[in-house]
Amino acid sequence: MENNLRLIDLFCLHLSFLFGYFIRNGLENPYLIPTYRNMAIVFMLIQIMVAIFFGTMKNVLKRGYWKEFSSTLKNVCLLELLCAFYLFTTQEAAEYSRIVLYLTGIIYAVLSYLVRISWKLINQFTDMGIVVHLSLMKAAHFTGKKQFVEKMGKYTVLTTSINYASPLQLLLKRILDIIGGFAGCILTAAAFLFVAPAIFLKSPGPVFFAQIRVGKNGKKFKMYKFRNMYMDAEERKKDLLEENRVKDGMMFKLDWDLRIIGVRMVNGKPRKGIGNYIRDLSIDELPQFFNVLKGDRGIIGTTRKNLDFTRVSVA
Image 1 (tube, rainbow, N blue to C red):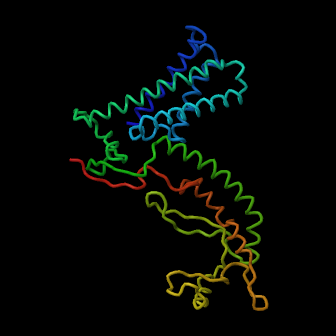
Image 2 (spheres, rainbow, N blue to C red):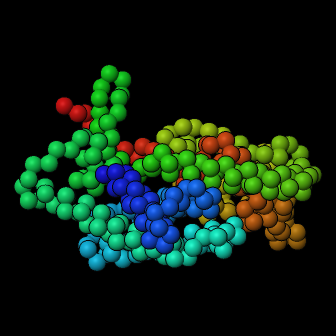
Image 3 (cartoon, rainbow, N blue to C red):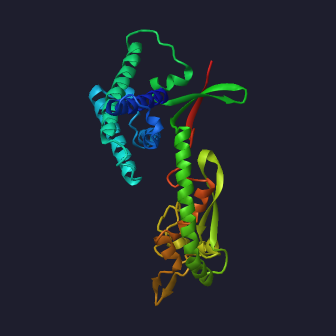
């Protein structure tokens, strides 16, 4: 239902743009002027961005009238500020009427608020006992969860998911992951020039350490790190079991782990090695940007459509 409301809201925004222009300039065609034609598109794109990243169109049916008014004003203010910033950045502010910009915001605030209130009134019909027919896809609103129909083999199922991202949100997240992963890989390559020789000189062998991890939707992948332990770390572990700080043996923790590259005892006192600095500065984590670029994981979390879900059969 929120998606339908978003589409109606975008239509209201476009109407507001046209009304604002007509009030200021008369019944002329704004699309014949490049600056105004571009702004009509920019208005829509910025509103979509504001709705996604600031959540101004979420939980409309759950808010009271005053909170809805505040949310509407917040949405309009963000839209106006970002549009003004766009005009200033592109140096088109002198060609675009400030009155049209202000009128668009004022008219849009009124229309958007009226649409949201009307949407709430329609929803109240069900509370009044009036029969309302909804498709199964729209039943999510009444449960507080996202629901959608899917096929599992020969069965038609209703999937209920608390952690759900829309296709547009997934696309934006993946774009950010690719940009961040690419930048991180460049940083990793620069670090490699210094870290790799330091590791190899102290402990000849592979510079990278690979480990199987479980990622999105249970998919297994190889996670990469800079190696910070000696190649025979598992064999050394047997000789260090008595020094384990966790007495029940459920974990293996040492005050000074001699398996870490470069750690040594000098006059009976431990000294840090290159492996400690790689750990302390989280340099060992840098190769994971390659996993981000591949799509094995995200820069933040592993948000995926249907990450956590429950499936029930539909009669």
